[in-house]
View 1: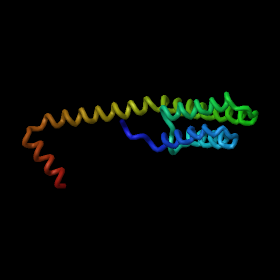
View 2: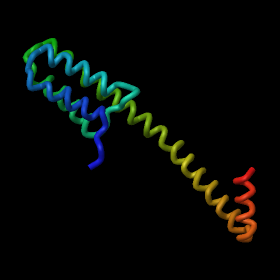
View 3: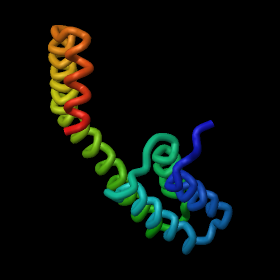
View 4: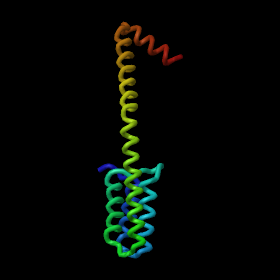
Amino acid sequence: PAPRALIDLVVEAVVQCADQADDNVQARQMQTLLALVTSKTCQVHGQSLMLSVSHIFKICRDTKSAQHQRQSNTCLSQMLTIVMHRMEQSAADMPRRNSVAEDSRQVAATANADLQLLPPGELLNEWMSSYVN
């Protein structure tokens, strides 16, 4: 199995604190998971993102505190808004990434075609002179 990212371990550690049904712990969990999911420097993806969202949802569903109910609703809204915004940005950026990849393939194809026109001896000489210079 591939090594897991540190962010995944952090998310799991925060969620495992759920064994303590203390209101203070739940408040800190919501704050921490929201900070992790909305962070621009260490983004939460895949299973850890699902774990974060589902844990906040469980707090929202199971809490008896009206304050935590509101806080978890707000937290979920913010998380999902950020995730959707990032997905939209990624989709909008896709044509640019595809065109850069296509340009790279065209440049490589042109270079290969030019190299095939050279006789084998000149190819070696050209490479040696470019390497030395």
